[in-house]
Image 1 (tube, chains in turn blue, yellow):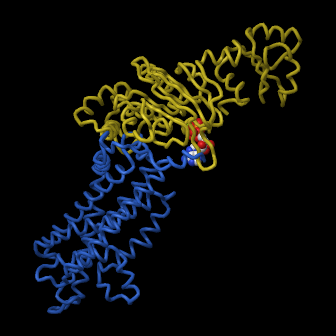
Image 2 (cartoon, helix red, strand yellow):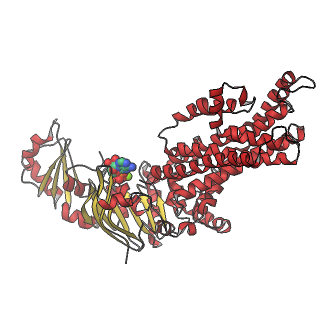
Image 3 (cartoon, chains in turn red, cyan):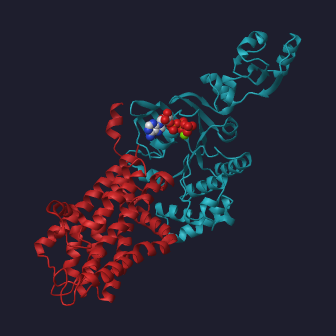
Length: 281
Length: 306
Ligand SMILES: Nc1ncnc2c1ncn2[C@@H]1O[C@H](COP(=O)(O)OP(=O)(O)OP(=O)(O)O)[C@@H](O)[C@H]1O
Ligand SMILES: [Mg+2]
């Protein structure tokens, strides 16, 4: 390859940034247009499903787990334990669903990303626009869930509303790394594996349904690697009424948030890089 | 001033050189074609002009700007019809136009005002509310063109706009492109079919293996690289090379293909008479005007459409 080729291969950049064109907002608008077509079916998968888990596990299983006057997790009704777990777990699920097939389709099947890049939009606009859309979706599902859980008394107190932003951040901590994976993957075959061997185990072993202290020591350490464990630790600290039965110190909360942010930001940076390498050739 | 200027433009993918140092000057209002076989480097060149693929070497200026640093400003004034339609099958025709217009920062009100005439231009008014996956190939192609016009581009880049369409759909599309040309839009096309190049292009370059092997107007190219007429003769033989001696001296030049002989001459009928006088009776004969297909054959030794 000639010398100028290697120095220029990075990107087709523009100094004026996104001053020209619709910017990331127009990308978000695109995803919302698509979403409006299918919102009814997502209500079932992303709102009803977690509520069914809450009913089945929280109330059903809870009735066996908690004896009158004694709860399995001291001071916490099992339904509250599950509700504060699910609010974060469901954003993980939604996040992964929104960053796999539809992003891959935009790259490979429908070629929407190719059409976008023929306009003044840049690669970062594509990623930012999707992140904004994702955050909106996560806000919808976590708000719906939190409100229902509060109405049912599974979550308590005004601080329980803080589970919403925590769940959104927790979702982004999964969605952005998965986006980065999707941006670079050659085929959609990995998505099944991802769901079966990463997301499902994390759903079960990040403290959603039982305290991770129940796990063998090695698995407990491993569970701390999962962003969901950190998100749930925070949602439990704010979602179970006051005084908080499972409190978290301020500095601990800061560390949990930092861990989630690290995954989200890392995913974003890699996402932009991998999408650029994929699209700009 | 040239709207598109390239000097020594190159593009390599790894060790493979797809565009190997081409020079171009495309002026405003012109209809300019890239003609060449599969893999000639047409799409690679178009993508560099469209600022979706980084320039691999040499210089390129589009609308007086540098694609490496001013991609967004250039793209704001281009319309791109890619080789593969990148439409959203799940959305309606009107929605496809609307979301695409937003990428250019066009307001909703203006999009609303524009989409009517554009749909009319694309003859898709009745289909405005139809999902794209219900459209025919020709309709999709026209929608892609309408979409590319949403920002009133100064240059329209069309990569094989008619490939895969039936003759009627192709003619409708040609008609639309003529219309744009009359309105002063600069058209840059890549083309597989010779008849199309002759119809649509004021000027064209013939590309092969990443290089420009000839350039000029269709008529100039035919005059330079072919003759006025061509006599095609077919024999009932497995290999036409063995019949080459039979036609020797009857034409300025003879091209031996697998299934026929091409005799380049200013007067095809006269050559045919001469052939009959020799007592040679081919299985079939055809006298036709020379076309760009012949130019291509002459330049590359291969036919264009395999
Ligand atoms: N992204 C890529 N990576 C590697 N090789 C590529 C890439 N894009 C194109 N090529 C190669 O570069 C050469 C030129 O491709 P290009 O698409 O420009 O040809 P073309 O003239 O448009 O052909 P066609 O008529 O088939 O569309 C081909 O050999 C192709 O395989
Ligand atoms: Mg091509």
